[in-house]
Image (cartoon, rainbow, N blue to C red; front, top):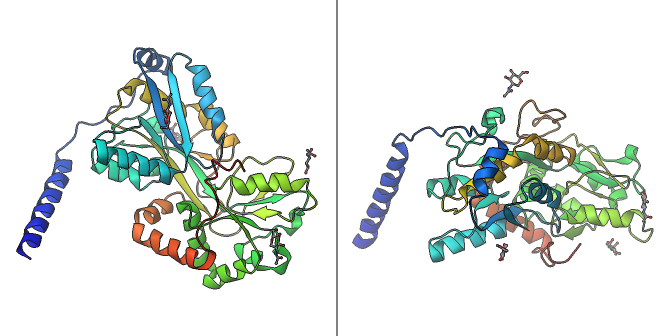
Length: 364
Ligand SMILES: *[C@@H]1O[C@H](CO)[C@@H](O)[C@H](O)[C@H]1NC(C)=O
Ligand SMILES: *[C@@H]1O[C@H](CO)[C@@H](O)[C@H](O)[C@H]1NC(C)=O
Ligand SMILES: *[C@@H]1O[C@H](CO)[C@@H](O)[C@H](O)[C@H]1NC(C)=O
Ligand SMILES: CC(=O)N[C@H]1CO[C@H](CO)[C@@H](O)[C@@H]1O
């Protein structure tokens, strides 16, 4: 008993002391003043391959972004690995605990709760990209330990144009309980992805748990990955044997066979953070990578592909608060791990555990 009290006293002393460290005034982080070409010149002096952990759940995800970086900066080596953010952070933390070292230079992940924690653990390099002042102020972490890159959204309705008339597309999530959607829905397991978890919990907050029970009666095709529903709708489009017609757990550029509609309901959106681990042996290359992500070229590409830019005053950008979006709420949710786990188990109770290989392996 006494030992337990003592060690908990020591622990809280340590916690207070390390929290106290944070109160020591830090020198302000200067905004990067060099151009991309000047940073590139410095990056060329570094040796090695920049290791980037990139959150995504579909083979080839954002390959165009990596190709653009390689073609603009051919003299530096980039190894960008796409995987579920929850698997990236698990590997990163295990490597850190086991070896005391990071195995990654740059992270771009959906696990928004990791960044403040890594910052408290003093593992992130405070850094302000050159257009820091143009980033939407409410998305920014003032310590500059991480940088919002762009806003992703789940919850919009994507439907096969050959199977669903635009006039038939639901307006709220409650409409999916109509018998006419039986066998036609393809959705991502909410207990496999925190953003989909938050989307489902928001829908349940607005429409009740009976909504989920009603949804299950629709014989939904449940899949892993948020790219998979879009891929299956593409395939279903020209296949008269397939009933799959609609989803709300994907995001993708629309084309001739899959169109998008925004619901009159709350969706989930969040600013994807990028950060540099302090331990990197390639800080200039890492800075080059972050600056390039915030460049007009890449931001315009992301807007074209359906995201909202983190920059204000960039042409063609969507309103981060339009159509049921609020990019600030997801972080509060994701930081409450107890709530996230409670909901995961609720979904598992009704839907069972996520089935199938990683969406990056099964090729769908
Ligand atoms: C690229 O990253 C993966 C995953 O971290 C790693 O297994 C692989 O060895 C890396 N390749 C190179 C060339 O750095
Ligand atoms: C963005 O535009 C607004 C209004 O047009 C202007 O007040 C603001 O200074 C601009 N911000 C930046 C960072 O250019
Ligand atoms: C449920 O959907 C699957 C896939 O679309 C289909 O093969 C199956 O026949 C459906 N089951 C029922 C009971 O309608
Ligand atoms: C391969 C093929 O037939 N593709 C067609 C699928 O359907 C869309 C329209 O829904 C056509 O544009 C494609 O050419």
